[in-house]
Image (cartoon, rainbow, N blue to C red; front, side, top):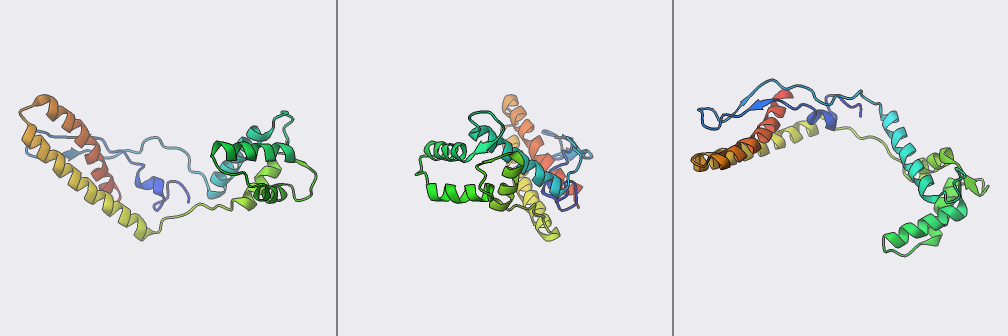
Length: 190
């Protein structure tokens, strides 16, 4: 997935339109043009996965490396796996831990560094970044549109019923602005 492409999940929700809501006027709501907020440079699939494996390997090393030498020994790994099992209230499966260790340390040298942990994670946790096809993206947009329309109607009905109570109307007005933003999101992708 290339973040920012037309079919990325992030793209479905990356626009935050500015919305003004007419509580007591003729219209139910008005929208102004949307603008992209919190834009970050797009990362490739490989960059996203590399960052995930790097963070996971660093956390694994930080949790296991008791002596602080920058390496994870088999004993340290097994002790960390035991602590994790205890913390999760589950039985420590030494055979499964041994099998995972053999993936991390296929040569049997007894201690591994962060790069070797990353290589083992790639084998133990084979991941890839998924994509939304155009039909799925459109179905998500359509569902968001319908949910927003229903929510807006519910809020407008509440405003109509409570318009004589200014504090309640203000609370509803604030809430409806967020829902109108969602509806505007759909318009951005038509």
